[in-house]
Amino acid sequence: MNGSQRIPILKVGRVLVVPVQVDMDDQTVIGLQERILSELERTGARGVLIDISMLEMVDSFIGRMLSDIAAMARIMDARTVVVGIQPAVAITLVELGLELRGVDTVLNVDEGIKLLRAEFGANDEGDEDESGFGGEWNSFGEPSHLA
Amino acid sequence: MGSGIRLESRAISLESEHDIVVARGEVRAMAVALGFRLIDQTRLATVASELARNVVKYAGRGQMIAEPTEGTDGRAGLRLIFEASGRGIPDIPAAMRDGFTTGRGLGQGLPGSQRLMHEFKIESTPERGTRVTVVRWI
Image (cartoon, rainbow over all chains, first blue to last red; front, side, top):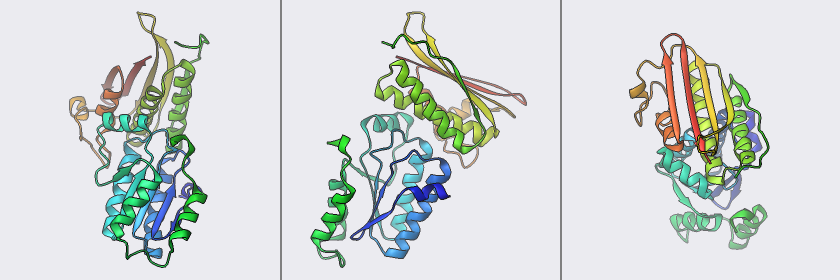
């Protein structure tokens, strides 16, 4: 379980941002799923943005966990977006027969945030102001190899 | 294509979930060293992960052998052999069907892996064990 502690869960406005930067064993994946759900409950966040641009491989186990996270988050009234899937990973997922059911995928973090904000609506941004949102976001940074 | 450097075969024992991570990392490193392009590195690492997980989840323990190989046409390739003793797979055609699973498995592992590889062979002897051999050519 402790392996997942290496993966930060950042609250940015009403979105939980989860940058996955290490290859995860199965227990780490399960631990991460549990942590995301308890953070959703604790913070009342409305969106989950999982950045997997650093992941060089998504197998059926990780793929199904992403679908499960999206399904569970939806039950908790939150929407999940997976961003930054590498082209080679996308090709492999399709060949493997995985469709990431129920998961919205977008190319980069900006698009992910836009999608989630469109979902919450303009009047539902909680106590976060525009600049705080963007500022924190930039400190996390766009994966450079996507540029 | 390849670098011309002879690569040694590697055997990785598969006993825990962590070994799945080790196996896919090792396979990717070998694929890189052999000169596979990125998409094929990803295919090989993914298949290693799927099949190593099958060994750990269903047989409990076994091993993966990764060996550089050469085709009759001189093409370089990478062969992965997964071996596990145990009950074996009673119904291979069923196991090869998309969506088939005997447990809380994912039902994607075997047929999906076959689609990602050029060669795929599965041998199972009841009460003896199972061997899955896959090859991807450069």
